[in-house]
Every structure is written in C-alpha cells, then in structure tokens.
Amino acid sequence: MGKPMYDVFILCEWTYTTTFAQHLRELLRGQEEQVEVLNHGMTNKQGIGFVLLIWKGNVPQSFLGQLFHNQEVLDFAVYSIGNSPT
Image 1 (cartoon, rainbow, N blue to C red):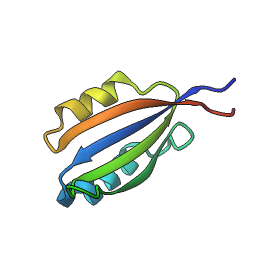
Image 2: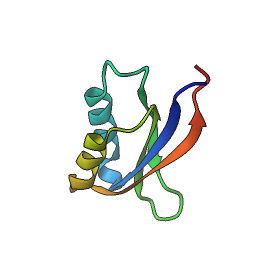
Image 3: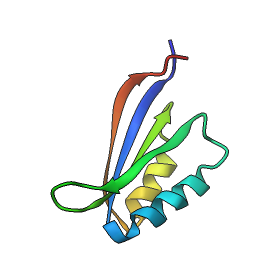
Image 4: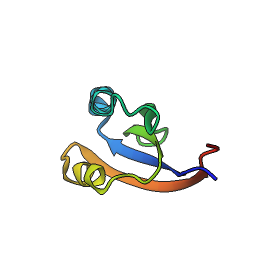
C-alpha cells in the first residue's frame, strides 16, 4: 500500500494567485515526487483566488504554519484523498 495522499486547497486574493502559485512552485522545487501545484485559478461564485496542491505523504506542520501566518492566505483546507498507488 502506498503513502497517504492529501490535497491542500488554499484561498487567497485573486490578484495574488498567480504570484503565489509561482512562489510555491519555486519553494517546492526538487520535491515534485512528493508535492505538486496541481492547479490555480478563481472560484466561480465569489471570484476568490485558489491554489490546489497534491501532497504524497503527510503535509509537514511547518508548511501549514507558513500558510497560517501568511497574511495573503485567506484560508486553507487539508483533506485526505486516499493512498498513492506506489
């Protein structure tokens, strides 16, 4: 059985979304087998920006702490999506 997998759904101001997604790609460079910026865009109803990460294995508390203290991050959610196939 593979490692547990999680999605990290991050909400931010629309004007910050592309910059933040790029920042996360740079921050996580070299960890592509463990974490990936899967998508970013705008919510349909309120036009809030989002970034979606997929994480293979447990999401480090240090990363979640960074999100919690980042003034540009409006909110975030972490949820299990099952186990990786490998």
